[in-house]
Length: 444
Image (tube, rainbow, N blue to C red; front, side, top):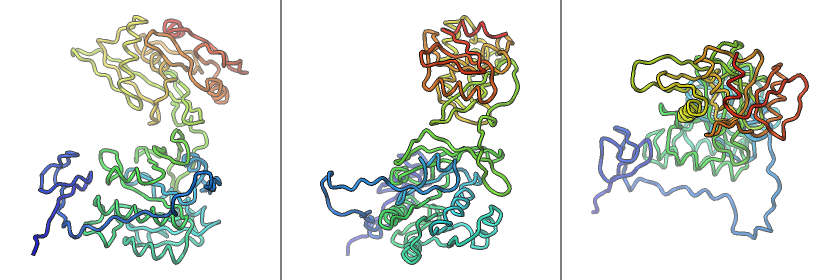
């Protein structure tokens, strides 16, 4: 009789080995290797949802139909709505509002098509209480189940157009001999959900928990398997939330959705610029206009400098890249003669938004210089421009759209680089600058 073989699988990254380690050699996590019997490991479920090979010219390329969720900010991030048969993964910290957002979307979708909401964490009574608080009623189908085979049977019976799984870490497949939430279970359950989506044309939403490192719990392969990956960001103690797409096979990944958590659920923020402006005009503050997808947003950059007695001053940036900040400080010192080598530098983007747009470079430098000299910019002024290593202020894309947004918000002055695409905008005083020295002269 042959001896039964065993293997050890890491619950964090899926690394497999023939012997146990206290620390995973792949991801470095401690005490995550779980023993599994090789004979019990099932054959992988084949995700077969198409026929044989055909010629490309014979493929019917009708545009995939989209369904609006009834939440404009949600549709914006999805690329215009939900594509039939797509699999969407929504991740975020506990309590951030993932289930609330999907329940509100389900309440809108049920008006036109059947929706099945499956929860492995709450009872039906708890779901109803939360639905009543969010104003969701009607013929929404709810199910409390963790077995993927039972969910498949219910999908075959009810034929829903939309399926919501809350959450993937609670679902199990009886074919896999491991605990719920393990790498093997998540991978097998996700494969089954993808098969459901592609065969039945049912759009599937999957809720995923986030680890303390900020990644969706489970193997990285999970993000590669699905069509769209969304992240809910924000401080759970703050009312504002950002919904961002990091992968989208049916749309752009540059769009963000902005929500406010209220007692009756998630509310859309129609004017996001007010979130990221403090309304003050002190030294060390500068307002800029960044682009998130096709949407211009006004953001305030704040800087604080303090003299340090240590040899290595600190450089801390909240909401922006720290390495970019250090590069800009080097340009400021070399090209404009503003010394910051003996000072700690702290910068912050108000409101918790992540600023990756190079158009914010000049605003960062002017806020730092304003803190050094204790000077401020003129009232109602917006600063736009990318800074090169030579100290030149370079133009940015969609500059006219940014200036129009500044005018709509009531700003009177816009400091911007010289550009042939820039036209006169009514109510806005355009101040063009060539280099950093020209911009520093505008501090008063």
